[in-house]
Length: 367
Image 1: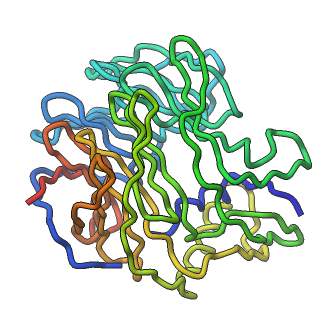
Image 2: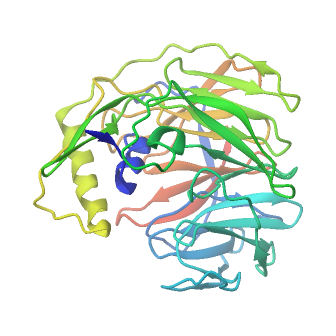
């Protein structure tokens, strides 16, 4: 038996998604007329514009929500050589705002990050130190740092046959200019169980078990959402930590329908890796769902934690924690909508699904 998560097995850390009394709601302001197959996060630019990617069509966009104008940036290519120009990408998967007029596009397949200005002009490839494997850096502040979870601390540092089960997983801070690397936080290690793929048995993270999430505010202040305690801790720029207060939550049982749905997703995602669809697959599941399965920080110092759902098609509810780590309120989204990003002036961006299953970008305000 070995600890060797496959690419699609690692992605299950984020799978799974109770409806609760909402103490606040959302008012729809604008929605793009165009639809997309699968959206990334949404980053706000200037003058009501946004940047995002369609991760299924593998295209990078900017759009004006006030006018509905949509622009496709750069060029998707099937093959991306090491010296490819910045305007080319293979699998645009995440967008970040690095401050001022600079937007970063993370290419999951090309394993690089390209820089663009808000007008949509490619500026170049971000030179970032390669540490702890080739997984991309997704989290950035606006003061010169990128942040990366060191998953190699779990899978054995790239050494074949080596099994590690550490109590925590380090979060690395990488100086974009200097290349200096230090550890700024430690996530709790996932819970593991046996996964079976045909005749092979390996260790994999339990689906629906608690996981920690990490993020930063633009000024480098960091937050850490603790899955086992359902709380949010904060790290000031001087390295001082503030421990948040745990919030009680309803523990939802993992049902057979949940298991069937996840295994169907495993098979679907496995197609891209050549997994035979008749292969025997068993996956480890937690008995109850975690208090949250996704977390996103707001520039005003809030962290929104997405509750799991009892039914897959139920509206999503988010628990909002403030800068002191205290729970403030719950926000229920419209059915079919999920949180995708925040704006500086109180805008809340969502990925909204229509009756046909396609998605678009919408901007809401709190009421």
